[in-house]
Image (cartoon, rainbow, N blue to C red; front, side):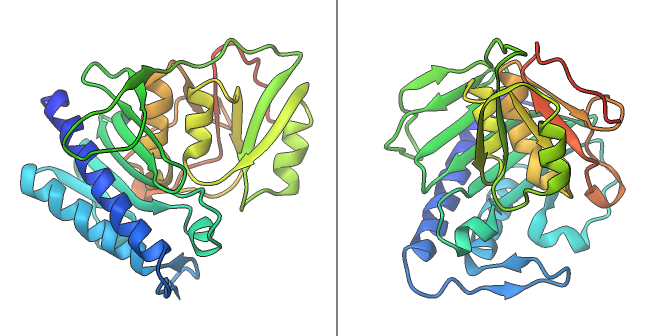
Length: 266
C-alpha cells in the first residue's frame, strides 16, 4: 500500500466531507431522524458518508470498506480495511456545539495504522503522514495543497498532576469514579474523536472511555494518537485495542500517553 498516496486521498476526502457537513450545519434543516438503535443521524452524516465511500471506492475498488452509516450491510472477512465515521459526534452537531469530526482510517491486521481526523467547525486537522507520524495542519485548508504542518507528540505525564479528558455527551458516574482514582490537575470535556487528538497533542494525558463505542468511532483517532506516541488499550486487561471484531463493538478502553500509571479496574 502506498501510504503517501493514501493520505493525499484521505485528506482530500475528509476536507470535502467537512465542507458538505458545514454547508448543512450552517443552513437551516439538519435533517435529523432516529436510526434503528435510537441514535440520531442527520443529512450531514449521510452526505459525508456517500462522498467518502464513493471517493475510496474510486481509488481502491477492491479494498474492504466499513462505514457507520452502512454498517448493517457489512460482513467483514478482510484483515485490512478502511473504516469511516463520516460525522462522529452527531449529538454535538445537532446541538451546534462544534465538537464533531470526520474520521477515516486504514486498518491492517487489527491495527489502525493510518488515519485522519478533521474537526471542521473547530478548524483542526490531524493526520498520519506516509511514515505513520502524526501532524496537525494549520488552516485555511485547501483540498489540493497541504498547508503548514506541525509534528505532534504526546506529553510526558506527571502522575501527581494528570490532565484528563472525558466525553462531553456520554459522561457517567462510572467514568467519574474511575477518574477519581487518579491525581488530576485538570479535567476537561470534549466531544467525538477530538479526545484522542487532545492526548496526541499533549493537551491531555489520559482519556478513559467506560461506555459503548464502535470501531468507526475510534479507529482514526486511535491511529492519530499512535502516530504521536500514544497508546490505546482495553480497560479490562490493558491489552491493545484491536479492530475487525464481530459486530464492530469496542470494549471499554483507555487512551493515554506512555508514562501514565494505569489504575487497575477493581
